[in-house]
Amino acid sequence: MSKLNFEKGVSIVVSGTTNWAQLTEHSGPNKLSEKYQVELTLDQASQKELASMKILDHVNVKRQDGSTKYDSPTIRFKSKNVVKVYDTSRQIFNDLIGNGSKMRVQGVIKSYEMAGKKGLTCYINKALIMELNDVDQVDDTEFWAGLPDASELKTEQSQIPQASTE
Image 1 (cartoon, rainbow, N blue to C red):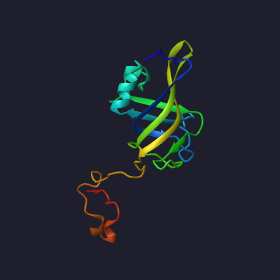
Image 2 (cartoon, rainbow, N blue to C red; image 1 turned 60 degrees about the vertical axis):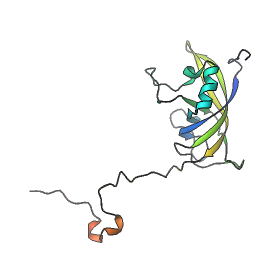
Image 3 (tube, rainbow, N blue to C red; image 1 turned 180 degrees about the horizontal axis):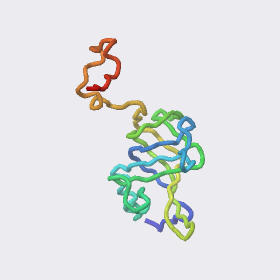
Image 4 (tube, one colour; image 1 turned 180 degrees about the vertical axis):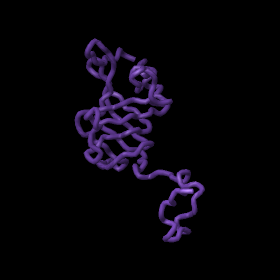
């Protein structure tokens, strides 16, 4: 492998599972960073690729105290502009992307130096949704456990019980 030049930027294609994807016009940019971004928990092949480049630990998302944010290696990809996101039919996708969606990302990793700190930043060029996890799809079986089925309730039972004053 030739020497990688992170000053100019190194192109990569990686895959994984999404966390907090805000890449489309519909989602808008992240409110804090004001950037379009996604935290991508890498699949095994992508982890191996970045490990062979000797940068996996450098691009892994960390908290302010330096500890890793996720149990598995995760990269935060970002962009100042709306990202072109595609579905598997090669059509533009402009809806919300739920946590746990499977995605392939084409991006660039570049080195930076700012305020005496050096590091690597991951920019996203485009994304492909391999498997969409709907934002509104939540398994709430555990949440309702122990309560009667909604079809069994009578109209007078549809109110919150009052606390006893005795």
